[in-house]
Length: 111
Length: 114
Image 1: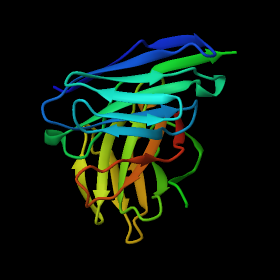
Image 2: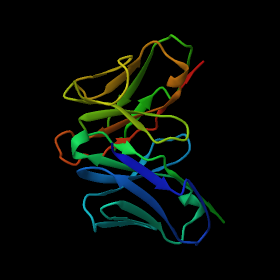
Image 3: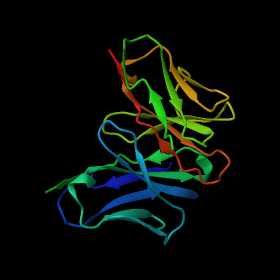
């Protein structure tokens, strides 16, 4: 059975303190790995798609990387507005179009 | 560029009632997926509609049903509501003809069952 595990569950950073969020996955036949940001009470906002090991994508202070077993979301010099829950999801060839989500990492950045 | 829209924003129902939630996809998208997100959990896939047909279904009972209209908008219906159906219901739109279909989410409908 496909599994997606995100760690840590919660992370508190000071403004400017860089860190990484982890998404470990067990999937046979990965089609894609997706990162989303979700603010409280809102729908997830698409950030990145990664398709193959070694791939990296960047957007402002965020950089996503992918290996055969896990993905990292690196946050460089975060600001308070980066506070949100970050969700990782995988799409497997055998599961068609469904996204299988982890439980997310809740990030709080304090001034 | 209009994003994914959902209505209503919030809804309160009692056990045993039926509910209909609505979704309009992002401009240019033809595929709609529905997800259920319980508090503190990641979204769970309910089903996906493409070309007015249910193309794929997740592990949800048949109390959950849907429909897609010719303009690509979609409805999610839930019958015989249970307390456990209380959740944020998310609609996501994508392009059905691509191999890697990135899904863009709407703001969700918060359903409370009393």
